[in-house]
View (cartoon, one colour):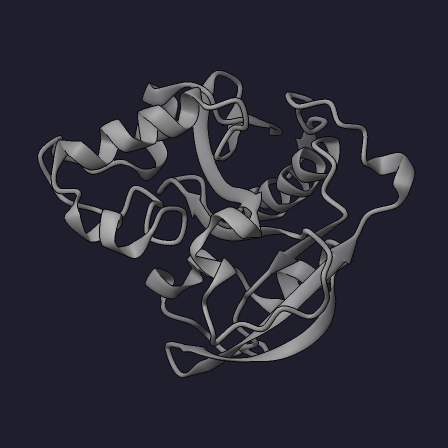
Amino acid sequence: MAIEVRPARDFDDARAVIGPKGEDSTVCWCLSYRIPSRESLALRGTERGERVRELLAEPLAPGVLAYDGDEPVGWAAVHPRRDTHFATFRRIPHVDELDAWSVWCFRVRPGHRRQGIMHALLDGAVAFAKANGAPAVEGYPIDNQGSRIDLTMAYVGTRALFEKAGFRKAADTDSVLSGFPRVLMRLESTRAEQTGAESVPASPQSS
């Protein structure tokens, strides 16, 4: 199976991965950390999907989608930290003054899990961030040390996932999910990697 990761632009594809089963349901839509908390709490039902539609139309895509052929099978949110909830989230520190990007939410559709898609999504998110000039990319996964985790908490990724992608631990945090501490993982870019090409997709990968 060859997985291709692309900047998220198509609303129907994004909805297939992060949207609700019922159109009127109020689910996250991966907005909780992307927009201000007050706005996120105020959006209900179809309003949340429409907010995602707006984000998909902005010059900078709000994340990346993984495709198996033409079928969308996964999502990762990635964006400059300064424009997300993490800019002011006190439980996760800022380690320096770099204008780092954050990758914080992974979703893989049922029937496609345990096939390496999260690895492809993280690689694709990093490629997208670097192509748009990110000097560094951060993640805030749980450090579960190999223990089993609740599937509902797997959306932040694990330390091992990030380490396999070349990230290093840059700091501890005060954030805890499902009883496991979250750590700040960091991958810095070289000057040559910061190409400034907004819509460069990640290369296809085999999972």
